[in-house]
Length: 130
Image (cartoon, rainbow, N blue to C red; front, side, top):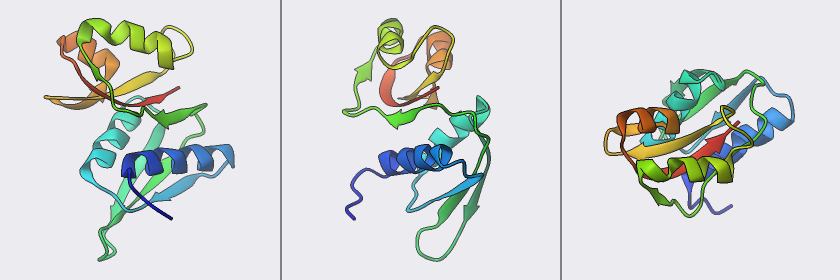
């Protein structure tokens, strides 16, 4: 199995585990981008506890699933977006207003599109979830 994009693999693992009705999923290999994306999902109530386990081989995350995710996925290619353009990207990836979030990597860290609009900063689109 070729693992080129770790964030995509992590999000697909979460999607598959949710579809099978699992209560938790193990994500490995990991990096900091995955961690900050999971923290953003946790802040909005899409996933529960995120636990890091150091297994001596790069570590892994054990993520508790709450059963609240209908769809989750990476946005490839990672489009650069200005804060004025966020509304158009919302319409493209999310099913309706006020449903779901876009995860954006900005100069001030990884955050949701809601926070990015409040702070009036743009960034690079990473993922969507609803």
